[in-house]
Length: 176
Image 1: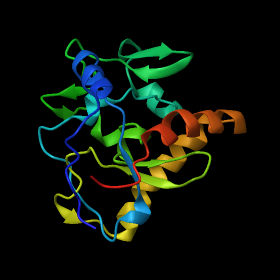
Image 2 (image 1 turned 45 degrees about the vertical axis):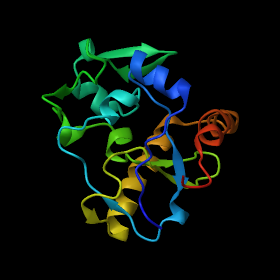
Image 3 (image 1 turned 180 degrees about the horizontal axis):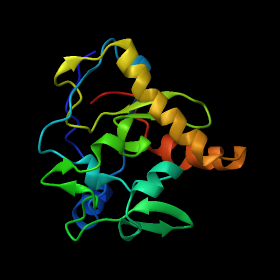
Image 4 (image 1 turned 90 degrees about the horizontal axis):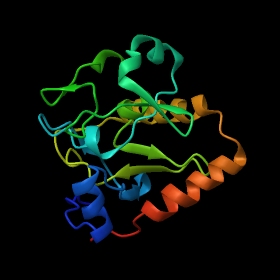
C-alpha cells in the first residue's frame, strides 16, 4: 500500500480548520499498511494546531505552568496561543519536547479505546516521509496512546461514546 497525501477535506473540515484551526482526523486502520514511514516535518506543526490536547498525566500537570492550562468540561487541556497553536509551540517547535503529553508522543497513531483497534491519521504530512518505522518504534508510539487512555480511567459507556463520536465518524475504509 502506498502512503498517499490526503489532500481533500470536507467543507466542514475546511471551515473548522480555517476558523478554529482544527480538523477532524482521517483514520485508516494500521492493518492496511505493509510498512510505515514517518518523520515529523520540520516547521509543519499542523498537529499542534489541529487538536485540543488533554493533559491527564499528573507529573506533567505539575511541570506545566497553570497559566498555560485550562479546563474544558472538567478536563485539563493545554491552552492555545492567539495564533491558534499550542501554547508550548515556540518557533514551530515543541518547547516541552522532553516531557510533552502522551497524546502528542503517540501521534499520528490513535487507538479506539473500545475496540483497541490501532489507526493512523493519514492527514499527517509526515506519513510516508522519512525512515521506515521498526515494529519497536511503532509499539512505543502505540504504547503512549494506550497509556493516555488508561490515565483517563474511562467507563465502558465513555469508551462507547468515544468509539461512536470520534472513531466511527473518522475512519476511512478506502484510500482515495
